[in-house]
Length: 88
Image 1 (tube, rainbow, N blue to C red):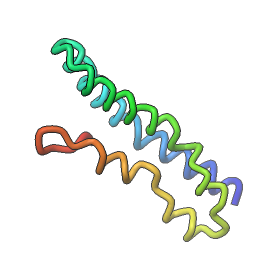
Image 2 (cartoon, one colour):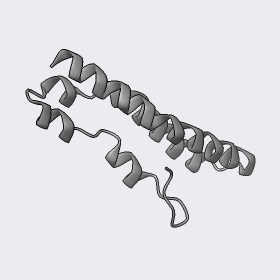
Image 3 (cartoon, rainbow, N blue to C red):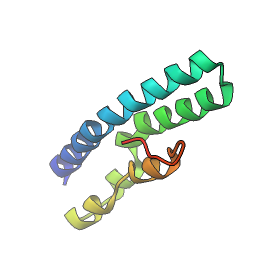
């Protein structure tokens, strides 16, 4: 399982890369508008993405099936709608 956990973490890192890029653009737009609340929302989402590979559920998974069910990025998509769209 240790190797499977590391592979899972690498996949999470690969999936979050485009999310970081999209959030960078949103942050810059918010900064240009002076929208402090939006900048804070984006900063919170970025921190969630940074923390995703360290999700304790990854280490707690005892089987490949349990590990596959751990998706710390799934709630990032739900928390990031803006103007009727989602950051992907």
